[in-house]
Length: 290
Image 1 (cartoon, rainbow, N blue to C red):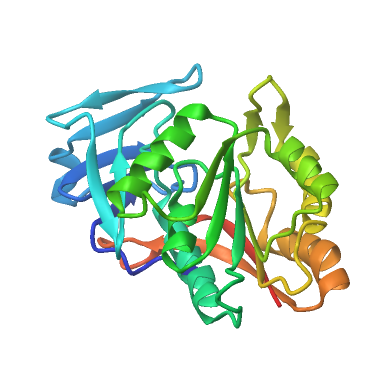
Image 2: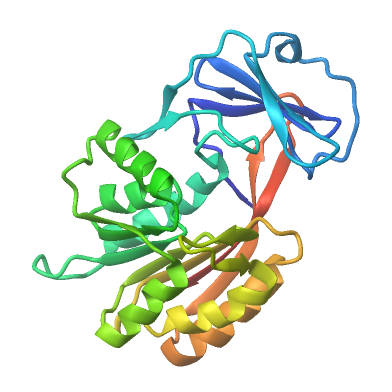
């Protein structure tokens, strides 16, 4: 398992009864987690000193209950700063487990033998609030950030400003990812690194429906066409339990390794749990590297 264990401003304090107890900077949140199927005594004192609690509804969705929590605050990871805002469906605007992938592709970008007049070009699809975008930009890449939500792209720009990357070479696009890639193929544009963090289910700006089990394979085949001749990496993430590491590995080997060479690794990603000393699984990632 690849473990995001370099955080200072974030930690999973404890897990029990379908919920995880987390510290985000100086604030403690309780949020549901479908992986937490065990029910053990909640001995950590944070369970009684939480600042926010997301309650899942039996009818679907849920709502936040706040206890002395600001509308917005920030945490950092290395040189990056992220503005957090608890919003719909339990999210805060950041997936901390992805830091283990940021570290991986940042090292590849920094070590790339590219001439100074030809920087590493990275495409971040389903880019959300920009964690991967900022990590790639901080490593020296020119990044194209694509997400269907105007609000998420605006939030990512705020994170860029907070991280001192407001003037970094980042192209911000509100667009349907599939249609964007189709246009890039027609334009002949290529990228040295591609990051794909698709939702399990989503809608594009014009109501386009995305279901990961049905859509991910044809989209992966499509996106592989815009890798450059000397491509460096391809990262794909999955939060859907059906898409296990072996499935991601098989798809990347078929769509990317066969035409481009290189090799694929895939594994679960996770976060350490302070109280138990164990690791909370948080999905899976597939990594292709030249």
